[in-house]
Length: 415
Image (cartoon, rainbow, N blue to C red):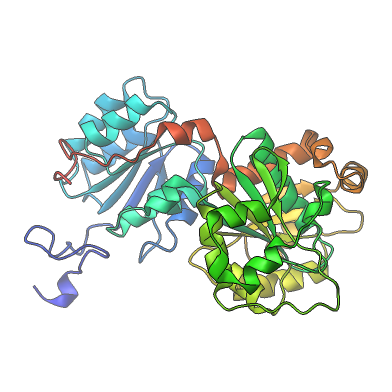
């Protein structure tokens, strides 16, 4: 068949049944019922597909109606939320889609039985409960759209998330420490807050504990790093929240050994579910290697022109497969820019907005008691941010493990 009449499915090996895709076959479509899921799917698939995913409203019933009249896409995302009999609806869908379609399901059920029925019983490639986030879609759906399996390390946790201010004074350290506090004390996830500034870092100070010499020793002698040493070097704040930081003399030169950051992160990932990196951008090997090892980047900015200018530079030069999560801190600051003005200047969406609360946050930081700040609008913003970096609804995430894969009894071939 001529090249201009067909194209190969991206990410799939050639075989006797899927050598080529018809020219009129869409690459990917989604049928969802709410704006939040639509945004998460659009951004989560952005780097996985050769063309933007076609998203339509209406859920699985709209998907069934559409597939009866049009070519089946290679990847199909369907929303079964609100369906009284979602399994029956998926069975009806299987009658109108082609066998090699990669069917990905979104719903509101969080129990393991539903997950098993949809994946093992019906053979759908994957199921995710709402609320969706860009990161969850990119982790669990996007690899399947490329014909790959999601990485096991992603399912198990041990994620490294970096928080970087686009410039000094925008509150990135407060945001990072607050997310770590929420993960460790509220969600009860094993969490370590890693302060990348060994001279002027404030992570330990904000959590009312003392830094130690362990971080410097680890990055100067990485051959000694293991999970036990990494844990002993960290200072406990609570049973599931630790801080790994230093407070070296300003005249002290750090004899960094190349590759130590990667070894440190590997050791920490075996002990903690979340590694929260408070990283002030610095042109040092340690900082650059930590940023390169991030699985999720968060950029914190303030509503000022200077912050927008540096935010543009950070977004353009950040690298990575996915764009960073953008946090607008101190929104409503007197004389500051509005959210719409910031987004227009950045040409990018602000993901999380934290209001300007100088008294509430200032008092909490001064007293080293971030727990006192976890109220009202600030608490809701931190919860939203934690959800967007992959910590939402931990009970639901536990219900979906282990990752079981599908038998392909209805959708597609057995895998």
